[in-house]
Image (cartoon, rainbow, N blue to C red; front, side, top):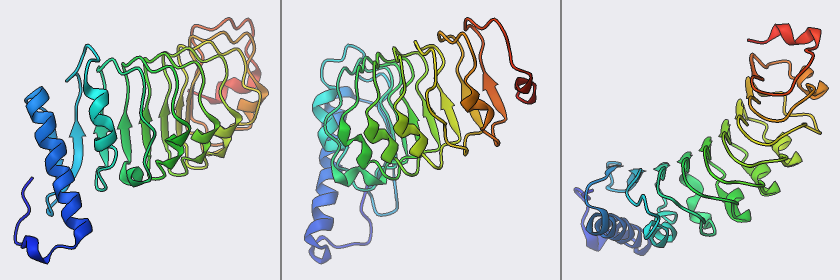
Length: 231
């Protein structure tokens, strides 16, 4: 990333600090991992960072996450296949992130400060070891897609119904046996396959906009008549 047509002596202190942080993050990651994909905007700030499988043994990437999450212009962050077991507390500066992919790691929980990701639209937590989701997740007011496929969840927090913009919720391959509250009516797709459901919650019937419902691999013995309206 190169800052063009802008003299350093004319930069504000905050702008200069941000440029130096961007340079530090990229140079440190390159020194440690070599090649990886990233993109910058026309001001030279990092907007997309793809660190897929740079640290498959989970030995070192966690040390860089604090700095990465303070990049003020970062919108897309891909951290799949890095054996991450823990995330740092989320700084307030992470508000620019819209797409976050944490799939195929070893996360068992999420920090409460995850709620600071107010701009987040797409969150992938597929194939981790999550045993619970903090209620603070309900504060992700821009979230449209939430993928919790293949985790260890026995229940989902009622706070999820606060996600007014959520369109796709994937809970395939967990340990759920019921949904004890009404989900938000914004949902278009709901995947509940390969859980422990024996009956279908009436709460699903009230989802008027729902177009696609996945139920394969459960312990269902009977389907209600209203189920035929779904794909």
